[in-house]
Image (cartoon, rainbow, N blue to C red; front, side, top):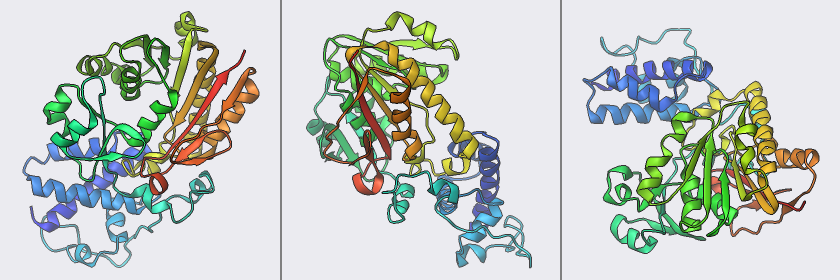
Length: 390
């Protein structure tokens, strides 16, 4: 493909991604994969260049651009602008009344949602490319041995973590296929560490998804005790049994039906030593991996997310036995999704106290800790730990 044809393809993909974000359609990666499937003539270098340009544009605009064409013009890159109107496969020539998107890191209304310490200086780090973090399965391997085989550097405070500056196909490695490693951001590994799961405990991962944190909890439990992973998303939860088998751990899975969760969890009331609520969230802490999420968040969608978080917290509370712990986490740096939820939970539910955390990274908030890309080199997370005292 010529540079002009690559540019036109990027514009077309951006148009589809903008529409998908507006209509809650497929994610950008899915749109790009589908776009390349329909353009089999594109070679590997073409695909890499197109993908890089698309994500360059996504990162540049905090609100959805008017169009893919407006986004490319908004980048203000003379080399790209010079390609317009240069051939049959090029974007149409520039007109006198072109719409040009204005760059911004994030929508103004969203800026007000962040914790105060997410200052302007921290904002660029929320959109930088993320490193690749692995969690070594301590039941099968040691991090030092995996570093000798795969490379990577240790992550301070996490004995099982390795970090790589450049991504690679982890799933193609024998280490992954043998269950020795899993892809997991260091921040997510810290969430599991805050749970402090131990052998013999009963642990519930209430919003388990595909089970990344469940597998980390299972390793901490060393195969002893009971670990239940539940979710309402059949597709994601269905991936966990294969992952658990590869990791050599036992995890019960429980698919929940929306609005029937309490009844389906009732047999666990008062039994859990730990309940992890890795709640659905805005994902504002993961923009460096999914920058298009900024285009999907609206105030209405955020309000619905806040309602869902309160719902799962109230589902979790009865499961915890006296003296047990509820760990709440979100991959968000919006205060309402962090401290706001914990404060409202404590107002609704009696018999709970906040456990003061002391982590070697992050910053303490009113009720928990926040980790950020600029300050801690992780995705953005909030985590709090509560103890049931009655």
